[in-house]
Length: 172
Image 1 (tube, rainbow, N blue to C red):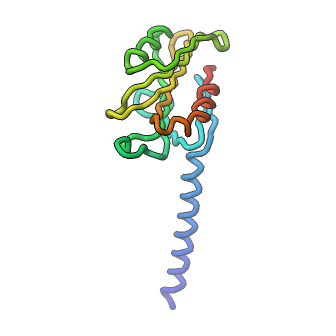
Image 2 (cartoon, one colour; image 1 turned 60 degrees about the horizontal axis):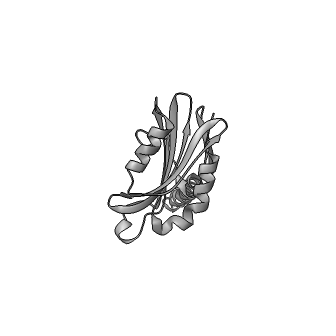
Image 3 (tube, one colour; image 1 turned 90 degrees about the vertical axis):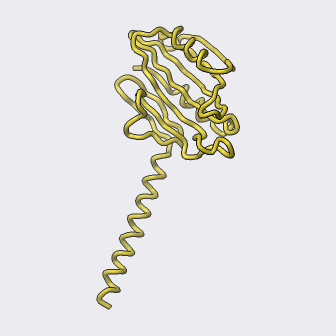
């Protein structure tokens, strides 16, 4: 009897803690507005943004799910935001096209008096085919490149979220 009561408290505490951890983990994959002194964007639902972004990036996120079959070791989607100091938009666009195997779409324009480009390319990650959506915006002293990479088999599942992310990305 002396062990039963503390045991029940321990089991109750473990159930409470487990539920709380699961709830917080689920919140990490929810849609989220990200604001920094340099940029703002909306992280789409289904992506996790670590506190410390991947090396060389200002922001990074990845999908919970991985691909199927040969793509089983590659995430269905990844997001990276990079800053290229003292670069111009045309150089960054040419580098993106040179690093890919096929240009799918390319658009240039001006948003809030800043030159920008949207480029969609096909390429490979770990010998797995991928499509990458790039949005580049030229700032006064740098070019910001937002890239979303998805597995072609899952592209339709992510298109709405990709469009929302790219449309929400702005510089301050």
